[in-house]
Image (cartoon, one colour):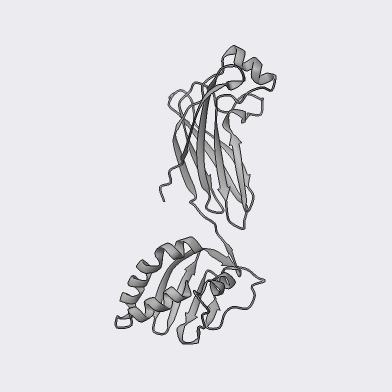
Length: 236
């Protein structure tokens, strides 16, 4: 990564700082995003890079020419020594931060619907057999911090009021939720069957990634089934 950055600085040496900043951000965007980095700014012989994370209190020594900040690091280019492609130096820097993780804070699944089981399917499910019609939601937290989340459910039926269900996802954890298994305090299903709904998932402390899935089945032991899955949509 640092090798690519140094090559870019050399390529744009004839440009002023503002132009070099724009050109390098365009050149490094995909690489930076994959590494948890944001934008950079060039000022003379120095480059400041935003990092999507928070400096750890126990941060260790950094490569020569690099100074760590709370949510950024600065590079004094003449003092930077790079071996190979520079990813070893980058890994040393990233290890000093608790990264905020991948994804976004708000996700939407507009199309939700769970079909009722037939009377005989209810019996089979109670007996522990089969894998019957339901919807599920996967929430992935790749950050080093746990996060508080809410699931908001909105109804097509105007007579039904939206409701919110709170949950948490631990750091570096993937959590899966069978939406047909969510229960109110009185034991009744939180999300009714045969009722078109939409879902909004909000993560308050870290970005997350959300995926929704639906399975429709029929037949004893759910011999016949169809499965669909889709990434949720995020406005960010």
